[in-house]
Length: 301
Image (cartoon, rainbow, N blue to C red; front, side, top):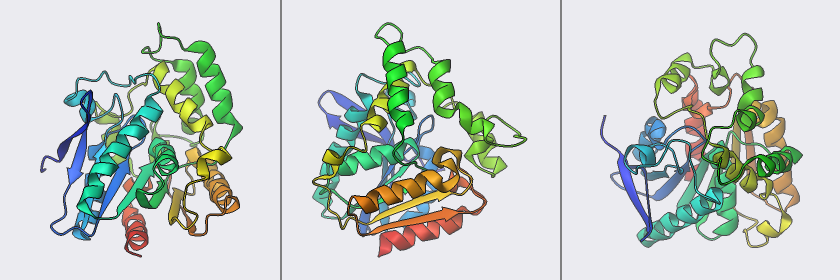
């Protein structure tokens, strides 16, 4: 496989790594924002599909993930203070550099990346021309409750250590949502090959630090405040997609709540599609080409 690893110079003090897949002739740039405990190169098949349709694809690995561990010397699962907001700032710097290409920028965020994408749109409302929200959820009191517990249990002395409590709160219920599971991560997809590959990877599914959960919960608990949407264009095209059996999105109920939230905020171009017989990673399911085609159709409009 071709080496798609890519270095992103964010500032004189910060360099992050990820991936880049270039199209022969580009009509637009797509910025993929990945989920927790995974890495950018997992999106190679999807990115190459978009390349064939003349989209450049970029993805920056989150702190403590992927190429930042392999090439950047990060400790797996460890993030800096205020990592959620710092990463959104980093994505903004990448997007500002891409704007020099004079090509429209579309953002696509999966799982944790779906929340980062929503925050990106809030903070850089004029940079993203379209947004695709994959495997997400809507506003929930659980974010604030989780943040409160994290603030009580995480300190500078222990923030880089693994947290069984916060991990159980964040993702423990997902495994329990699957009846007669073959593995602890069957909630990712029906596609057993995808699950097996995820389990075998040294960069995927490994425990995150207490600090990781603290920063994630800080970010998600702050996401749905009315003041953050003042400057976001109400005609921004937004596509929300999820599996009907995705426990992250409460089997469709969470993403429906998210779509209604945007509608109440006055967004006029929001689309929602929920796929039957798919779980969390709809871009990696056996019938993923159906999802690919829908995303492409949205980006081509």
